Amino acid sequence: MAIKNSLFAKQNTDNPPSNDLKENNSDINNAKNKKKKSKRIFYFDALRALAIIAVISFHVSKRMSGIIFSTHAGGFSLQWLFGDFFFAGMIIGVDLFLMLSGALSLGREWSIRSFLGKRIPRIAAPFLFWGLLLMTVILLLQYHFPDLLHVVDAFDFSSITTYMSNAFLGNAFGFGPYWFFWMILGTYLIMPIFNKWLLHADLKEAEYFLAIWLITCIFDNTLNYPFPIKISYFTSPIGFVVLGYYLRHTKRKIFNNKIVPVVLIIIGLFCLLYGSYVLSDTSLFKFDRYSIFNAIEVAGVFLLFKNYSDINFGALSKPDNIIRNAISSIAKYSYGFYLIHQAIMDIFIRILVYTNMYTGYVSLFLKLFVVTLGVSWILMATLNRIPYINQIIGAK
Image (cartoon, rainbow, N blue to C red; front, side, top):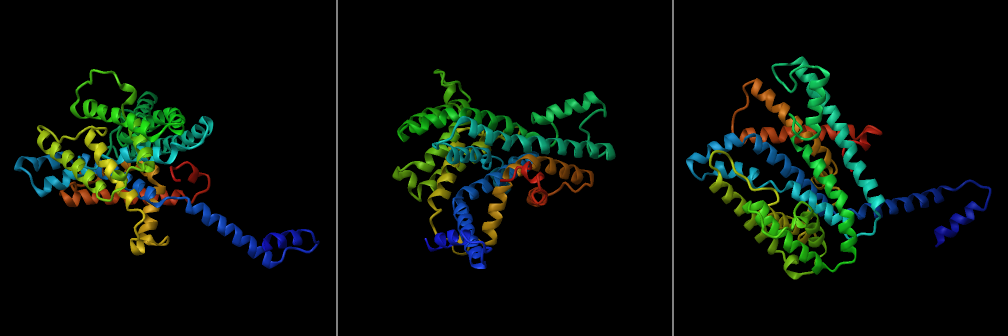
């Protein structure tokens, strides 16, 4: 109150503000900034960082699937377990992103215009920016190094536009993950309807929806057997969005227990890995990303981070800890990482193949993962320093 009175007193005189007043205003602004920063929930950042790391490691193992499958002939081994853990077990990255969307956005007061006006530009601008930039880089690489890359048959209008169309649809070299944009766009379009429902619904009604959604996960996405009742309105990926909202807000003791997440992760991961081992016949097998086993594992991971978020992990709990800052940085750039990592990885693989260095197993996996994540990180951090450009690279 003294600060406030002092402020009005200074404003009513002809004298310029004193240094004390400047310091007071600075303290107030710092307090506001700290309050604003405090709203950021670290375990959400940690989940987002884990999600993009899972996506990158899955795509690395997918590129190495032939090498991983070659270890299957010799029976179960640590080599098989290492490769299949990242292939069949780390397919949960996209599911985590969907759950985070639900946990952060559903059950809140917002209008359709404000939600879509904020969310769609945030995903569309980086999608277009990186798509056009990466296409240009890839075409230039083929033009100057035709033995390294071949994405178009000729540098004419028809070939280039066909390549661009396929790239934006996720069907071209370096752009496989771009299907995610269209999926998350469709999810955003339906989320206002679910948000309005959840604002006026009891959590038991969310449980009702999730129970039917899990049935679709079992039949449609695990057994690949059509359920006789037509319940397509309950099918994924919207189920993971509602699941994220539910697990964040549920008060049920079973989901706030610190042992349950571990059990869920073990069950889900075991089923994914064992199923992949048994069902791999002529190639490496993985369940659909919306299978019941994925739902079990990803629910366990979400609850693990939530239920242990209140534990003091020593230095990691300090805001200026280097590991904590790295996690926050990866989370901040996660969407940008998603859009660019595949192109970086695929180009690097072509270089390794061209130089006869595409060899190894664990060493190759680590090489691909570190280079892909490292180059993506450097690129995002560098462009994030450029005004205006930093608004369209997928950083938040």
